[in-house]
Amino acid sequence: MPADFRSQYESYRQMVEYGLAEYLPNAQIAQAKLLDAMRYSVFSDGKRIRPVLMLAFCETAGGDARAALPFACALEMIHTYSLIHDDLPCMDNDDMRRGRPANHRMFGEASAVLAGDALLSAAFETMLDVDYVGDTPPAAVLSAAHRIAWASGLYGMAGGQLLDLETETFDQSVEGVTARHLLKTGALIETAAAVGCELANASREQMAAAASFARCVGLAFQIRDDLLDEEGDPMVTGKLTGGDRENNKVTFLTLLGRDECVRIIDSLTRDAVGYLTPFEGHAFLAWLAEDLARREG
Amino acid sequence: MPADFRSQYESYRQMVEYGLAEYLPNAQIAQAKLLDAMRYSVFSDGKRIRPVLMLAFCETAGGDARAALPFACALEMIHTYSLIHDDLPCMDNDDMRRGRPANHRMFGEASAVLAGDALLSAAFETMLDVDYVGDTPPAAVLSAAHRIAWASGLYGMAGGQLLDLETETFDQSVEGVTARHLLKTGALIETAAAVGCELANASREQMAAAASFARCVGLAFQIRDDLLDEEGDPMVTGKLTGGDRENNKVTFLTLLGRDECVRIIDSLTRDAVGYLTPFEGHAFLAWLAEDLARREG
Image 1 (cartoon, rainbow over the protein chains, first blue to last red):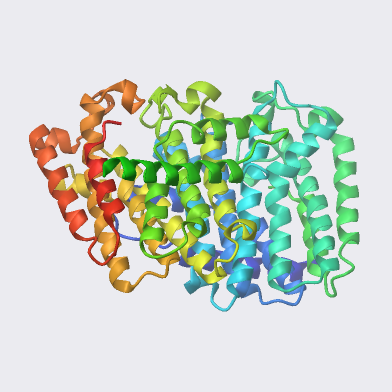
Image 2 (image 1 turned 45 degrees about the vertical axis):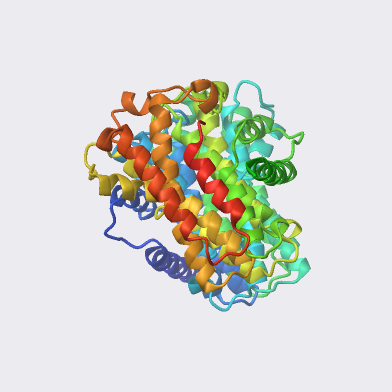
């Protein structure tokens, strides 16, 4: 029953909202403008896909989602920082994000750079805080935080962002664009699944299955993003349409056309669901994969 | 004998260079331009003051400096990322750094933003890597990495950077400028001392003494920086003179004048050395405080 899955999604999402509010509280400090800029972008109308995926994998693998919450929220902070920096004039130069003016349009470029920087630090402050990670053994905390550090940096998201800018020199074939997206959006999504499983002491087979699932979902997610960038409803996506075209980006849409994109999204989603067999009670994750493939925003 | 201390400094610095080369190796990857930009700024002619301070405190407190190396190098990566972002056109708009073109002048603004971002991630990848931290107990790794996360973010360096930009609204008295510098440069310097001590299982008294020492040294360091910004030799400082004046910054120099600045630096340095009594064999640290107070670059 999709309605139940939707409410399950909302309850995970609510956990994330509570977590973020706890980990990034308001404060009376001299540098309040920086905190305001951080909170402006974090407490916007985000779908919280990455943290929800982590919590869901943790629970599906038999763990306690609450143990994953600091890591899930850290991942959302990292995702948010990447959006802030990505929107900067020297990057994609986007004015709107999540239905509101981009961070640099509200707070100025310098504060937006610092807000992104400080959110990346805040992600690690959160994950490495013994008051938050509680009973999780220190070695498990280290492993999870190390995965997240790796996924956010040179060999993950930041590396993918760089490739995204290299429109002139980087391989613009389907393979090249796929490689770029596996870093830019795939790394955090794969890490969400991996950390969720690891904190639940998932089996090696489950870890591998989660990685394959996340890789398919992440790629389908990005192709759907390319479609929405061109033909989405700004009232639903929260950002203006046609940004990729303006930036002359080579995307799955420009390479393959609309119909082939839709076909690949369906195929990747079926594959993703197929990978879930090592998890008992994986109906929610299967629904989530399908829901993301159909999303309008 | 200052010559011996100088060579001790150089041997710590050499450890840091080896560490950075190990933790940030060259690689044949699609996103090589990002790695190039990261390495360009890291492997420049930096003095490595923060990591040397950490290693020296670790050894002075009876620990093994090698255990502190991943954290020391992480701190240097964070310091380097802050310089890259600080030099951006939307921030201080500096063209020269460490005697070479600033990162954004070499690689472009977008890559410089990403290089800073990726260095912050790399700092945590390094500190949280079990292959690097070896025998240090996971709980100690967590504590050290958490201190460094905290010091780099909203309540430390990034917060101080924001105050540095708020020239119009923020308290520009001596107290206000002091508060700004305790965050902007003080936080990383205090953390260098704290993590060095902690990894050596220093006593509570030593931890407190190290914090007081670092607070004095950090402030003296910043006042010296203000002087050098106005009257330093660009061939020694590696950056152009008069940047603060061009950016209309209120500094200790503009507030107090040259003579008073020199007097305060001396007084802070004497205080710093006085705090070292709980450490046997602290001659190197005392020399270091005095050397930093006299530095020309």
